[in-house]
Length: 345
Ligand code: NAI
Image (cartoon, rainbow, N blue to C red; front, side, top):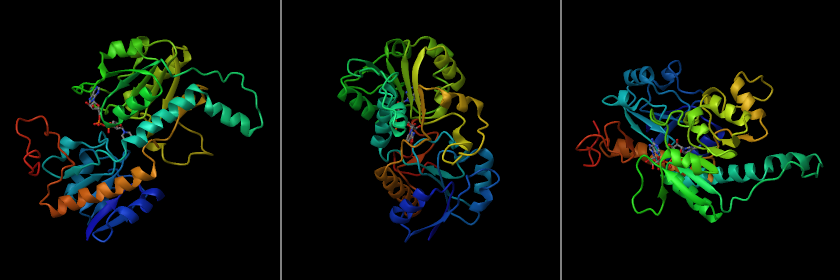
């Protein structure tokens, strides 16, 4: 049996991994705690650690896991900005699930957009209180408006199709534009200037951190709707709040937040929220926050469990070779070992 320390376990993880996680070959040690320098110890004696978006996998944690003999870090998500992949190189292999349901995330972005522009969040609360007035609920048609998509990978492209279905004009920015895609690529500045709705679907990197900042918001149309279902730190939340207060930003829909790690995924009702900025954002009538739930569909959960288990099995039964390995050198060096179907180190 391959022993796997499973950090930050939620009930839905347990259900899906017990059903789809090949438990005849992989033994899961489900731990509620997140992986940190203090909790890494719990992985002693395990071959694999399985982590999610808010686990800390920095240099110190990697060194500890390495000293305990952990061979594989298996992310059960696509984004890997929380893992120091470069530091792991030569020590522990890292695998992720590049795609489990891009539809889940793109459809959540669409749900947020419709909720926001048609004020469904307000209407829902009113009618539950038998308040059937519709004053202040005026929205706007999406048809004919311009959607600016940043990042045209798997999720961005599905969101583009959804926007086109509404009759929106779509423009996009990507650091690596797709060829022959029929997508109208523009510069970031042009996207900011022309878009009525801006949706973020690029990864969080040193280049994209705070790409939506004061300067960027300055360049946007008055009343722009900003959607973020990618990673919180793409947006400078202070600048977003200032944009909302100045009425420049018409609405913001956030499934992710830069400082979400100690807040999201937990029930904090009944507690005083110490994050002043998040409290102020949530208090705005035109801000909708969901708690990093864009991925949370039945299809995505079963795909995540199946793909994570397949990654683990592939690593241990295929001489350490796994198509979904993350290696900081891949794509950057002349000859990529993974492309030659060899292990990265
Ligand atoms: P993908 O890898 O298919 O696409 C990412 C796109 O971003 C690529 O086209 C790439 O060229 C582009 N890109 C890279 N650097 C860029 C830059 N500096 N500026 C503009 N574009 C850049 O990834 P996928 O599957 O579409 O996911 C996108 C993001 O969505 C992930 O990085 C992840 O952070 C987030 N995500 C959020 C989830 C949630 O539950 N809220 C769930 C899954 C993913």
